[in-house]
Amino acid sequence: MIDVITRYFDLTDEQKNRFEALDSLYREWNARINVISRKDIDSLYVNHVLHSLAIAKACTFEAGARVLDIGCGGGFPTIPLAILFPQVEFTAVDSIGKKIKVVEAVAEGASLGNVRAINARVESVSGSFDYVISRAVAQTDMLKKWCWNKIAPTCKGSLPSGMLLLKGGDLTEELAAASLKGTIYDISQWFEEPFFETKKVVFLPKNQNLFEKFL
Image (tube, rainbow, N blue to C red):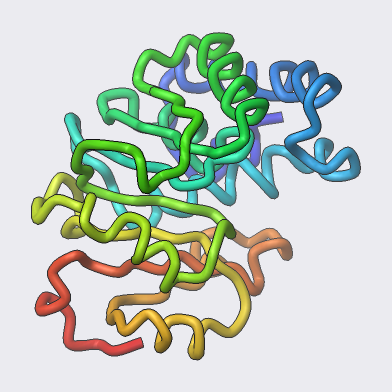
């Protein structure tokens, strides 16, 4: 089942075991609390796990980095990234309590000690983070409003601190509205599955002076 992951990432045996555990964990919890479309559960590893890991192709997090996931839903992109980066601290936030319950249960079932799940609106979460991640939660200008002041001016990875967003389609107007500059990565350059043809990773650095390329 995890062949689609090992095709693109070199994993330890422990990481392989944790990725393999996700299938049964999500099937069990999805039967109780619907966090993944019923028709989509059979595509868990491509549409959710591998999609989440596209962020790792754009940026390698260093040990000790602090990552905030806004609107984490059932744990994407946090859970797959937490498996890939066991020395990184992930804080997954969602305003819907039942989704946080799933994140906590899956993190425990996969023996992940680097995931903290919080049932709250992100505006109320305290602390600072090296990176903010999100998958199809809100328009970029809203994400900026909610969390820009929570991003520390640090560099705990292969990219400077900032936001790494999983988006799709034409983002020209959306990103212009946020008045931010950065880089758009086509996920199809990394993964060959048709699902990723229109999918993007958007990187928006906290220090806007670092990039001359405007979106």
